[in-house]
Structure formats: C-alpha cells, structure tokens
Image 1 (spheres, one colour):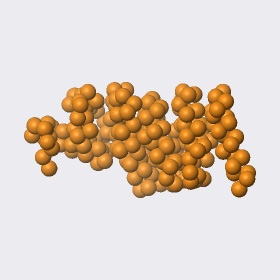
Image 2 (image 1 turned 180 degrees about the vertical axis):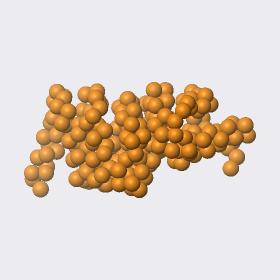
Image 3 (image 1 turned 30 degrees about the horizontal axis):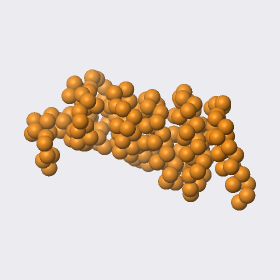
Image 4 (image 1 turned 90 degrees about the horizontal axis):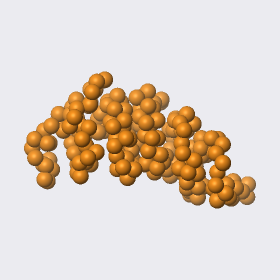
Amino acid sequence: GEMPGMSPKVIQVYGEIGKWMKTFKSGKMPKAFKVIPSLVNWEEVLSLTSPLTWSPAAMYEAVKIFASNFNPRMAQRFFNLVLLPAVRQDIAEHKKLNFHYYRALRKALFKPAAFFKGIMLPLAAENCALREATILASVMSKASIPMMHAAATIARLCVMTPWYGTTSILMAALVNKKYGLPVRVIDALVLHFCAFVGE
C-alpha cells in the first residue's frame, strides 16, 4: 500500500533494499540504509525494507549501524520489534541461534538500556523458552555490562510477577557478574529470595 507522505521513489528504493537484505551474505550496506537513523519517519522507512525477512547477516549489519546511531528509545523499539522476533523465530526453527544473530545480540548490548527494555525484560515477562533464556544468558555473561544498567534490571526482575524459572536463568547471568551492587538492589534480591523460602 501507498504510505502517506512518501514519494514513490523512496518506496521503490527501500523496497529494493529490502529484497537485497533478504539474500544478503556479506558486503557493504547501501548509503540509503545507513541514513535511516537520521530520518524522522525512520520506522515507516525501515518497514519498507521488510525487516522480518532480512537474512541473519543483514540483521547483524543493521544492528551494528543502529546500535551506534540510534538514541536509546529508537534502539529499544528496533530491538523489540525487529531483532527480538527474528532471534526467537530462529531459535524456534533451528533449536539454536544463528551465529550472526548471536553477534547481533552482543552488538545490541552496546545500548544496554535498550537491550534490557527491548529484549531481556519482555522475554522475562512472558514465560520464554528455556533455550531462549539460556542463549540470552550466554550473551550477557560474555559481555561487559555497566553496573548501573545491570543493577536496575536485577531490581526490575525481582518484582516481576508471575515469576518463571527461565527468569532465574536471566537474573543469574547478571548476578554472577559479581558487581558491587547498590544496597537497594541487594535488599530487593534478599526480599525476592526470601519470598521463595516462604512458599
């Protein structure tokens, strides 16, 4: 369908880029793609490229561009609406995660707030598959994550209800980093685990 306020030329160019992204193996991203973060209507333009059909290699290149050029709010939306569904679908189909997607998740962690709010917390909130939790935990355990971001996320996980077993896997990946956590986060963790003892 015709997008309001978009020239046929723009629709055509990004449609072509989308076809190219579908079969992309390696190479340089087109200039028109690299400018997406600077567009006011970046979401509409991005949707013209059919992001959910991109190859894993194309997704990695896109995340590389967006993780460094999007502001945290934009990155969060991209991670949540494009990267997360692609990753979940890949795990569901292949029982493991494509290497390019794995690298894309590691790249996404360069925007920690966006990563946690766009990928990890949504996964924790809905009883995700054990395999999904394990893979995400592996990404987090290999990355260096700023303590304040990790602490804020641990605090959010502590108050999540209902609590799923997979959430423990995600939390452990952060707690095991042995940060000097702020006292309020330690308190939240203690309360959280005491609640389990009481059950």
